[in-house]
Image (cartoon, rainbow, N blue to C red; front, side):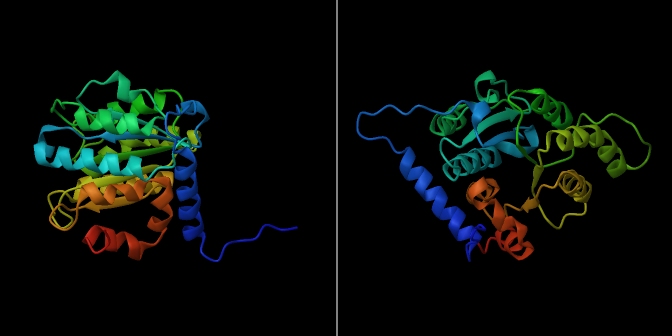
Length: 247
């Protein structure tokens, strides 16, 4: 007998997520036994841009966005690690399936700003175990740790630096979702946006622009969770999110 395909796959997936959340709610006094991170169906590693250019307001919005992503992830099916570009946190960089604890840690951790070591951070993420099933990266500018592989072409140089990391992501079968946090119209940041799109396009991930003048990072980042990610396959939905028309 063949499998029956639901008329509305996204609604079916969201209903399954609700059931998973309900099943994970402990009875009074009960202790939750969290799945081992290596056994989680979804293993996310998130690269968090805490560079000086982000500023305190944007980093706090990003923190809230990460928490919303965690709240929209299936409990005991998802494990998450957060890798900051400048802030040292071995605890958050170690993948955890207790998403409530991760959210609490993200909210409380004091961040140390600095440069944008995008490539070095992603390399560490790819070398960490357990291996991610998906990467989510966000930044508000170009990497500051790109090696000068090519002359006089910033975009080609950034892409050339990314190619070895793209090869690893393909080998791991782990798509890279990328988010540019800033103006969608600025010609000054066009190179950074094109670079992030290249990274996601080459690995089968999604690319989005979170313009703080149009929408809220704190609300929109949840769409990168497994329960909501299917919506991003629709370009019109992505445009609605980026314009702030979809909460």
